[in-house]
Every structure is written in structure tokens, then in C-alpha cells.
Length: 259
Image (cartoon, helix red, strand yellow):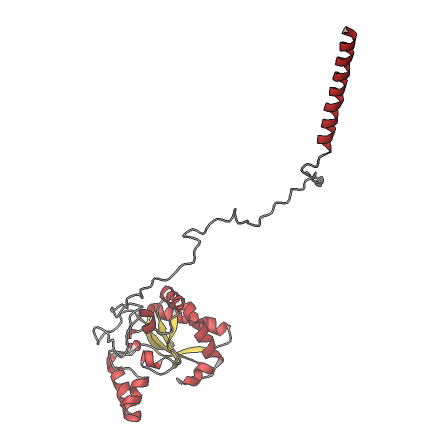
């Protein structure tokens, strides 16, 4: 009886051993994660790392990364006649109307304010390198001279026509010393044809780089009160001229948000 029990125990142990081995082999045969072994790199080479950002790795833009936006409110037009940004037109007179700039200098024999003159010399120099010979035809004008000029135009063409092309005393940009009538040696006339010349087009395109704008642009007579004057530049300074361009305005009236 004892022998029979011992034999049965031996058989059971053998069966248990083979069953455990079969289960281990079955588990080994199941598919697992595939892990590829990278190919060996050449001596001294570094592994390539992708720099393409993913949705999870791309940081959200912070204040310094977001594009700057102009304030909704337009800047206030300065009233100081000595300010580079002063707005003077038919409705806004200089205060005082007898204003005379204190820092006049001469460019091509014409008076103009010192900073505007220095910038104009740079503009003329750049134009010369581009093949255009620009010349200052008229700069600062006193109130008395502006009075004589307007009266002459009125006598020749009538008051209404004179008001389209000539400011009354105390209302002229030339009186600020910041206005500059500029044409070229190829087209010295102060007329609208200058705007169609190569020099006129170059000046209109590059004036703001030197702190100037074309003060009375084409198609804006209803805003400025004056006909298109492609020769008439107005000095604002580089910073203000850059902000003027960024605003998308075509005239100072639009830039300052005034009628």
C-alpha cells in the first residue's frame, strides 16, 4: 500500500514539473513590445535630436511674444509750435501766429530747423547714392512772407484756388521750420508731375526712414484741405514718423484723429 502511494506521488510531481515548464514556454512565445536596438554611431558623432515642437512642448505666448497693438485712443496733437509733432492746418493756427523757430540752419541756401536740416542732408545723400539729385527749394517762411505769397496766388487764381495750394499766415507748415519743398535736378518744378518721376517716387518711399512724411498725399484734399503736393515734406523725427507709418494713417489729421 505504501509503495502504491509513493508511486502515485512521484507521478504527480513529474506531471507538475512538466506543466510548469509548458506554461513558461507558452508565456515566452507571446508577442511583447518591440524594442529596436539603434545602429552604432560613427566615432565622435552625436545622436540627432528633433527640435520640432509638439503640441505639448510649445509654450503659450507671453506678453513679450505677442504682437504689439496700438492703443485704441489716438495720440493728442501737440500745440507747442516748437514740437516736431505740432499739427497746423487751416483750422489750427500756430500759437502765437507770429512764431519764429530759434534753431534755424541752412540747406541749399534755404532756412530750416536744425534737426530737420540734418535729416534732410541724410535723405539727399541717400537719394544721390540711388541716382536721384534732390534739392531743397523752400524751407522756413515767415508769417509776413506767407501773407505776401497767399495774396499773390489769390490775385492770380482767386481766393478759392489760392486756399487749395497756399496756407494763410499763421497756418503754414513752412512757418514751423519743419516743412520742406523738395524736388530734383531733373524736375525742379513744384508741381504734381514730380510725383510721377523716379526721384519723386523714391522720395515718397524712403522719406519716413529719415523722419519725414509727404504731408499732403494724393486723394486726401478733403482731409488736409490742400491739393496733392508730392514735393512737400514734413519733418516729424524718426520715432514719430515710424509710429505714423505703424498707425496706417495717411495724414497727420488721421493720425491724431481730428477732423
